[in-house]
Image: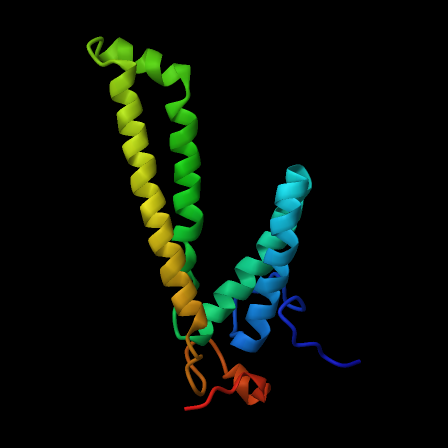
Length: 164
């Protein structure tokens, strides 16, 4: 039996390294499948996104390991959208309006709307910056030789060589 070394072979693994030649096709495939499905059939697109979340998170973490960074650098890509969703839900919640009115009756719903809109705008900018920084880091050439995350995947796969 031969050992497979593709990104989906160890789809739930968050340890080790993954080079660019294995990472970018997986990301391109995932986006090519998800984009049309999310537009044509959003519920189906959501289910496929949930199914691809673990393999993409594992592959992205291993890719960050290849450039010498911890996978924790990807956490803003999860934390910021979750926070945005919470702010959106709270901003549209009647319970928040009732609680704020009970604490301070002089606050109007217009004041709260401005606060929630400003918070969403700030979080959207932070998400954009995080996405850009992550894409830059994921595009870097991997650190040559072994690093603290494992051996160089390029030793086993010469297809990711870039001219100096």
